[in-house]
Structure formats: structure tokens, C-alpha cells
Image (cartoon, rainbow, N blue to C red; front, side, top):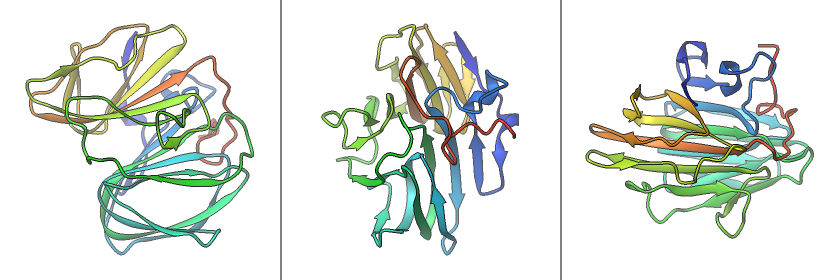
Length: 243
């Protein structure tokens, strides 16, 4: 099964486009198993998102341009850039502020935790290269031995810069209990015979796919284990069925 997501249902404003992936397959859950919400942000320098709470969200800040200053309720200050990714595990409650120092375009990814009220934690990772050309790179997972950015549910996040003349397939063999969400962050891609542009995405279940591009495409791939536990009551990652 391969299903393209209808972007007309996206929420947000001129600065943030919000994808609730579950809206396209379910009438009762805005998330898709452990994948709660994906925000594609484009925010100018000088903006400040003032101190605000998160509860039971795992939040990956995946910025491809710009610079953000992160300040949190523990008195911790750090910078997020294309070469410095941040995973904030909010747990029971956590407050933070974001100051946009340079124009930012990127994703804020809200993953559901495996259980509620985990210990809050902020983790940074500096990949050797900003882009992984024509090869899937695992950037976040529940396995500390595989990724520094350790998610608290059975969710894996990959990325790749696919260039002209190259094709790719899924990094893991399709299984009945493993589903995929492919997101095009930049550029255009062809998945089998389906065309995807910037900000578009599709679900993949029990099927092999082939991905190509005429020019270049920045891809983010989410892998969720449908049999693994997750908590769907998070402040942002949780089920927002009242939308």
C-alpha cells in the first residue's frame, strides 16, 4: 500500500505548515502510531518563541538553514544549526524558549514517547556532514548504540539528499508491523509512479518502493513499529482529535 497525503488538510500559518499524519487514514487519531506531528517552519531572524511548556513529547529540531538559540527551564542554553541537531524529551513537563538568530527553515518533529512522564532530557548531535548524499542516514532511534539522539518509542528517523541519476529504496525490508512515512523536505521526488513536491509525503505499508529525482530531493523517512507501545496524550504529539 502506498498512499499520497493530501496537503489541503494541513494546518498552520504563513510561517509554519503543520502535518497531522493520522488525519488521512483515521477519524479518531491525528497521529500515525508513534508519529504525532510534523511542522515545516520558515521563520525570519529576530523572532522569539517565548518560554512555553511541553508535556510528554519527544521533539526533534531538524533545521536545514539558520541558527536558533535554545533556552530552557533548567537554565540550559545552546544553539541549533544545520550541523547541530537537538532532541528534546519533555517527559512530565519541560519549558523552553527559541530565539531565531538567523533565518530558519527546517522541521520540528513531534514523536510520541513509549510511556508517559519520562525524565526530561535534551540531547544534541553533530553529524559529520550536513547532508547524507544518496545514502540513508539514521539520525534518531530508540537504540543508543545506533544513534546519539535516542527516542523513547520504537520509532526510527532517517534522512538523505537524493541527487539526479540516483535511485533508492527503503532502508529496511517491508514488514507487516512496520509502516513508513516519507516526507519531502525540499525538491521533488518520484516514488514508483507518484510525484511528490516540497512538503508532500506518503504512507508506505507492506510494499517495496523506488525513489528517484530529476534534480535533487531532501528526504526524511519515519519508520514506526505498529506493535510497539506509545503514549498518545502528549501536549503536541498526542491525539488532537478535537481539531
